[in-house]
Length: 360
Image (cartoon, rainbow, N blue to C red):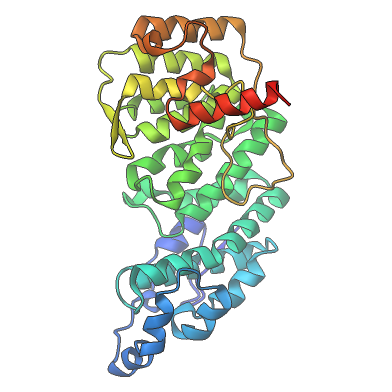
């Protein structure tokens, strides 16, 4: 489908060309003394101290910042493609304007704006994808692909969210082979561009649902990120075990035995050797006490995901053998279970829950 710029009316064959074209209407306006005075009075500064600005309050107090975004996002929520293109472009413009200081408010306002319109736009894009198929979502992913600009777009979390939802449903309904490789490539690239506190980083864990894909190697990407992004690798690998435990165990074995993969992971001020850290990726496979495979924010709660799997005896034996080979099992009980690989308070909590189950 063709796409038209709302400002200059130029038409483009792809959404990517539309987004990246140099339109005079997209140039940031210089802040004037009047606008600065009107938006930096005492009541406004006080409102920014509230951590929970809701959408109505944002639209009432920052009309010049949000512009047409409220109306556009409402229209887009039903999945209309034309409305979606305009709404997501406006969302990016608003967030960019605030993040680079062309509007008052700083990081607090940026965060409030991000979450105020995140869900309706993600829901709209998800609805459009369910109606029109993967082609629509892949076009958005291509238009906002961070690898094309070597920077993560302000609206990348919306794209990643819907990619995650669609990857899970496709994997469950049609198998991993039916997932477009471009979708996995987008999710797998996210840790390169944002840190683990970014909302898109959490969404990227759904990458694990693509384990075993014939055209995109999730395994190779996890191994490439093993030292620099251990949190991403651990949670993604954990999800992969729920999808294909035989493919996941091969990645796991390399992670914990490859001497070129070294280092530690810092958690709450404590340093954990990466080998020990990666063993935690399999600790919850046989217990419902932990979360199970990852799903992105706003995943439909009615779409329950399995929280335990029947671990193949051969897979379990490989895990046990690797634990002894690497020394991870040295500090464990003689009759240890997978859940014992999660140390500290979590392990103690699981023991207490188990004891309660045994003594009703």
